[in-house]
Image 1 (tube, rainbow, N blue to C red):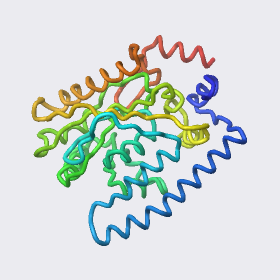
Image 2 (cartoon, helix red, strand yellow; image 1 turned 45 degrees about the horizontal axis):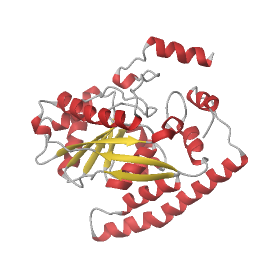
Image 3 (cartoon, helix red, strand yellow; image 1 turned 90 degrees about the horizontal axis):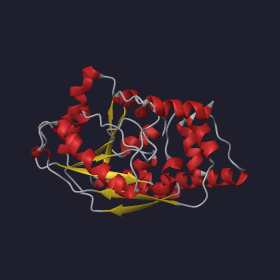
Image 4 (cartoon, rainbow, N blue to C red; image 1 turned 60 degrees about the vertical axis):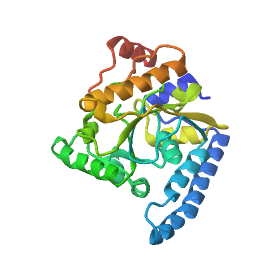
Length: 293
């Protein structure tokens, strides 16, 4: 566990130092990820010569999560096809763990497609890239999502608009749920709670921390930690009137399960989130500013 002081420094955008043994763990884990790539990428392309729907991206992501220190436990049964997962969002590890457990594709920011290696890995896992700020292109993005669902994929969205601390649950931005107005034939919605338990605040990628710093912190940790994936009761979007009702139904299920796991009330998130127009309550923001001053 890292100290609260280091967590606060990371959230403020500072580069947090690693110990000598921390650097050793980080380097060994990076090397292990490279080995996984060397093994699974050729197998993926070889498989694709003969058949569509390679299992190797799913296997790579499953083992990548494990190498990064995560022990993933499934609670409930994920639907395998014709399913739209709606999940909370805590870390980049959400993608590794959820895809490794279910084989799902994701809706991700368009900028990720341009990041070296990461963009290529996203394409292997059939990621649907969207520009949240591109209001004029929403219809085109919804069509891309609909095509993914009609191709019998499972697709996951993180409607909070950012990663949080595992103790909060932000309002859901439901524009990408427009693909369910009306829903493609036989598609179900399955809410998913991604639960990091007691290490959620340490793992969470929040505030002004860079992705590189967060990855270094996590991959230099000693030992492992558990991620529980709660696959909740699926429901038919046809039973609800529009995307906002669908989003509210999924959020209520996730919130109820998170409350049960925490055993205490949720707290207000302490950072503004522009994509969903969330402003941290003034008293929470003032408390954070006083702590950092």
